[in-house]
Length: 125
Image 1 (spheres, rainbow, N blue to C red):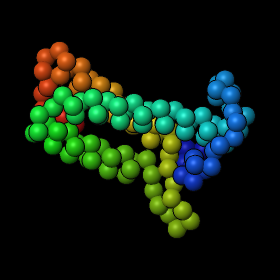
Image 2 (tube, rainbow, N blue to C red):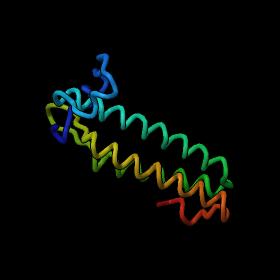
Image 3 (cartoon, rainbow, N blue to C red):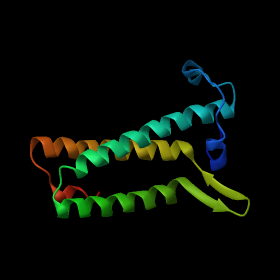
Image 4 (cartoon, rainbow, N blue to C red):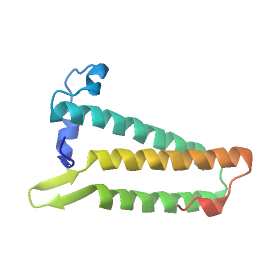
């Protein structure tokens, strides 16, 4: 599967497609469909973890978390997408992996808050 795909193809992927077919995609479009499903699930988890963490923080922690999240979004966009004269491109594998890593980072901070107390100094990363 090509590493860089047109972002519009992500939205156009609406064909009925069995989950088991993702084990052996027939072509790049099937692979894109499956990878998009992984990205969407990672993004959902990231948002759930962010909300859970934010709910445990004081005002300063929430501000630090938001600043860190905005910086992460900027970095993800710079690393995983680009604009060219013929369109906007997203490396969906990069976006999925980056989002999975960030979701895990946020989950680790929730775990810290639950066990040892929230540490605002760790929220910006």
